[in-house]
Image 1: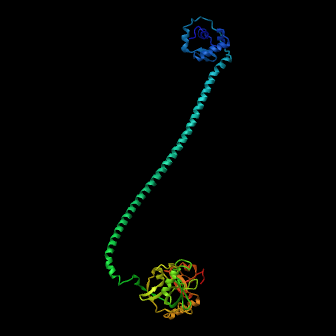
Image 2: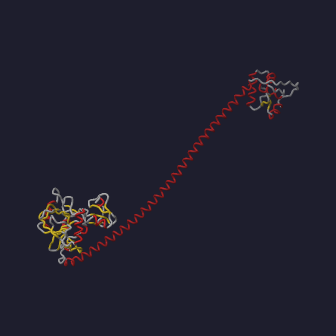
Image 3: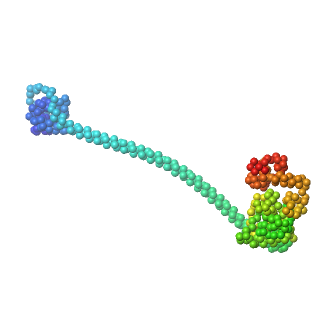
Length: 409
């Protein structure tokens, strides 16, 4: 309560003596400026005093309490002066408010920094949520793809099981067929003597050969020489060369078939000769069982390899024994032409002479209206099923075909 103390003297001056200004309080108490400022500052800190217009008052709640401790003495009203208090009091009180303001600024700064940091974290969290949503969507897409793949795998497994079942059924059927064949073999063996070899079956189609000649020499496994010096290259087969394994065996095999015999020759109608001037032919020789296709015989015995060159022949259709018609065959001499056969009609003879004079034959396709030289690149692209052969230019142009602008026939 500060009663009886120096601070109490300040309170007494204000409450009992109604002295309100700083100057009069100093005069009433006799305190120095420093002492008075100290006690005023103490009362302000304890929330006992308030200041209004440079005058000091005890707060109403404490005023009656302090009045009860002092006996009021009638005093002559003191003159009030509106002198401003010295600058020491504000200077003493100001530090408190400055400290509070600084503390508030620091607190506000901390709050603002925290707010900015939280906003930044919130933005990062928002971005992470968006990325997480995108990843979840992508994972769902992959899961759907995985489910589709799983379905396909299951379907393939089902198909594989079906194939396995079919295979098992075929294996069982094969076993049954083998059993049946085993039962029939005794019956078949009894009739095998009458049909000693299936190779003796003769093709139903007829082969018309153009030439016949005597074979006087064997060059190698796919080339022979006639008595007049003409060399024959066996069509669509390839025998080993002299430096390769199998050369002697293929040469001897061909020698056994044709050397010293009259051979029948089916000459290639497309080119007639190869790049070495040899006539490309399928060679036939007469045996007790019929005419043997020597080209096919060498292939079947493994002495030569198949080389299906572009010509009129199709090795896939060859038979070992062919139905050969030699009625049109003429002697193969150096002066004779392949087109000069004994049964040629007058019209075919005219075509041959016309072909000879016009540089024929010429090739065309059923799917085009252009005819070519046989050596033309585009002529080589025509399949055998679409090939049309003209003996002369006039024959081709008469059929509505025009000359190729590349080979210029």
